[in-house]
Length: 144
Image 1: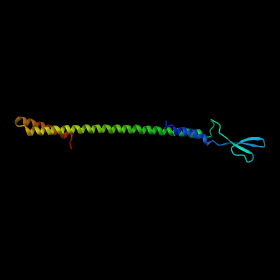
Image 2: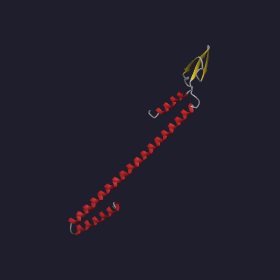
Image 3: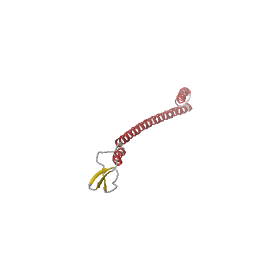
Image 4: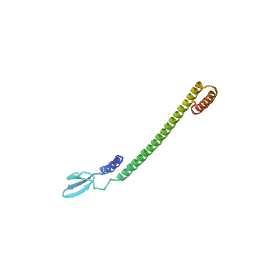
């Protein structure tokens, strides 16, 4: 509704630009003119409803077109901003998922190191192999 107010105001203001009409009564004769009487009594008449000055409709039409173009631009900017916001949210989710994956790989490597330190014999050899694999996976997924 608030978007239509400027358009309505422009339409209403076009009547305000109409030239006044003066009714002149002089020596019993009544004449109408676009300027006050030099002698006699003059009365300013209100502009008739539905009559607009020359060019008023083109001004209103031009204003309406401008308002429509501005509204289209605003809507396009809002859609672009929404697209950017969605892309940013997607990137944030992907980064969060990557951080969680790296945290899991760090924990697996840490647990493998603890197993190597705790175990002996053939179990220690298997634990070392798991630690090497966990280290390699961590290096691939999270290089830094």
